[in-house]
Length: 152
Image (cartoon, rainbow, N blue to C red; front, top):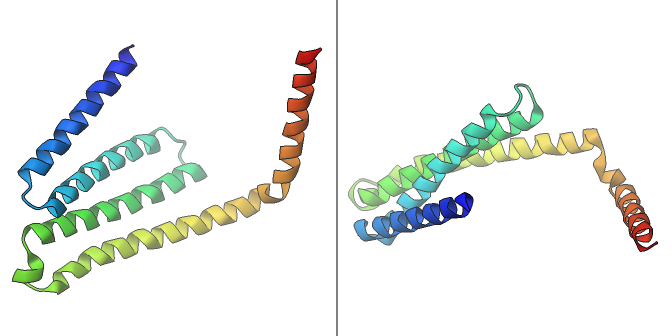
């Protein structure tokens, strides 16, 4: 019961926060920027908590750290984009002010590519791809034998 109440309170808090942001921000794009930044910060907090709970030197921790770096760069892009919209840099200064935001995205995608390649190598190392069919067959046999025993 406590968990359900906590979920309801969290949902109401998020809803109230979203309504406040959309009422305070004049421009919808700026409001969406603030929402994106809020969720980005929350994702970084939870990811940091996950990293602290994992063993040092583990491959999962290394991947989560890479994920955290990607989150940071995507958050930096969101912050940069929201600030540029808020201060109307396209109209007042120059469109070149948008380029740093795109550089943040490029770094995020480079880290995603690097991490995806590491995961590919890890998959090849453990070789589960070749054994998937065998594992499914064994699991199917076990299910059939359990259901047969239950029927007897």
